[in-house]
Length: 66
Image 1 (cartoon, rainbow, N blue to C red):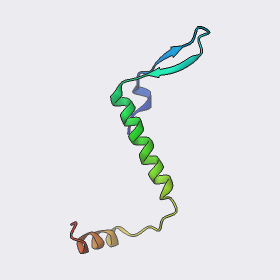
Image 2: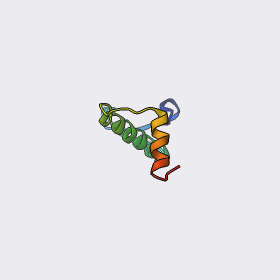
Image 3: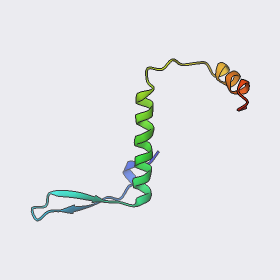
Image 4: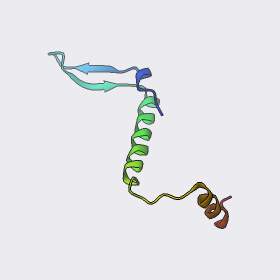
C-alpha cells in the first residue's frame, strides 16, 4: 500500500490559482490505482460468507493448489 504522505504532488493551476491538474510519478499513480482496485474488491466482497483457515487449507489441498 502506498504511503500517501510520501507522494510528491505538483499542481497545474489556472490564472486564478485554482488547481486544475495533478502531476505525479507514474509509479505512485500505478500504486494508487492498484490500492483503489484492491479496496473496491474488498467492498464488493464484504457480504460474502467467510471460512476458517483450516477449511481454506483443506479446500486448497483438495483442489491441488497446495
